[in-house]
Amino acid sequence: MSVSFSFGDGTSGQKPQVSLNMEQAMTLIVERAKQLVNRVIENRGHDSPPFLPEEFVRLQGIKKIEKADLGETSAVLLRFHDGYMIRVNQKQSSVRQNFSCAHEIGHILFNELTLEPYIQSIEYRTFNPKIRIYESSTWREREARAAARERFCDVAAAELLMPESVFSKYLLDSGVSISSIEQLAKIFRVSIPSTAIRIAEICPEPCLALLWQSRPKNEPKGLRLAWSIGPGRKPRGKVTYVPAHTFVNHTSNLYKAYQGDSPIKSWKKISGDRRLTMESKGFGHGERRYVISLAFLNR
Image 1 (cartoon, rainbow, N blue to C red):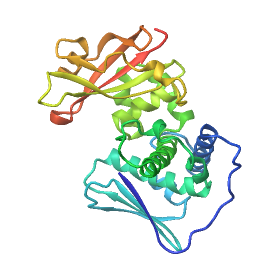
Image 2: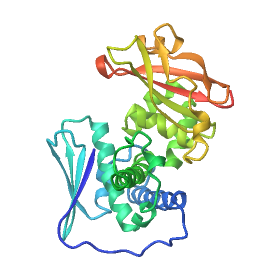
Image 3: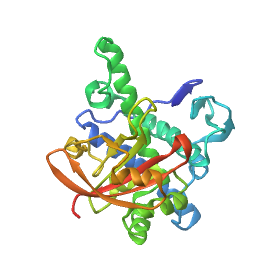
């Protein structure tokens, strides 16, 4: 969860051309994030990761990052007349804090570029398919716009912490496989799921990133699909790459990845009767145990 508050008078920027679509608007915020990364690289004189939020703070008029107990909230962005302050949840992991802070910086970039007009007329079905039918259309549209806004900021955060030009080099050096995810996550100081998503977004070899979680205790033993990302960033056509079965039982090869620590290779049927080679590995412990899979389109 991310919350933004504003204090004092805000500054208004130039409105973007309304002829641009959502995809082009997303490109704008990515390019703005890349500009910040380039300034950091220029200031420090090298492009070696990690890229931490503290390095971007000075460039965006943020007075400080303060750690506090925020309950269930990951971070808040406070805006005063003389600048911003980010308050981040001290109880969450360091990698979660890094992404939360970068996400709040994304809100600043979103406001600078005046991207709000792009999310005023989006269709709620695109962003929130689980909305109950009896809820008002006004509420649904508001929720959809909020989800779109958060997505913009997540995209910016990913570019800040895992710059495409740098991440691509490290990915190719380590090799595109499930075994490289943990190493890349440590190098860039981001979470395992964020690393997997980044691979699916920018990998030159088209692939999907999938996250599987244990079924609830009152259901048969097995795993359920939590999300599937890729290939690439564009949402268009991704429905083609949804797994045909989003639940797997405890006798499957995929479940072996959940039980052990070694990578497991298997096949996964994707909508349209296409079978993809898939590599999977378990991460986390106890109730937070999960499985990440990479499914490759051309192997």
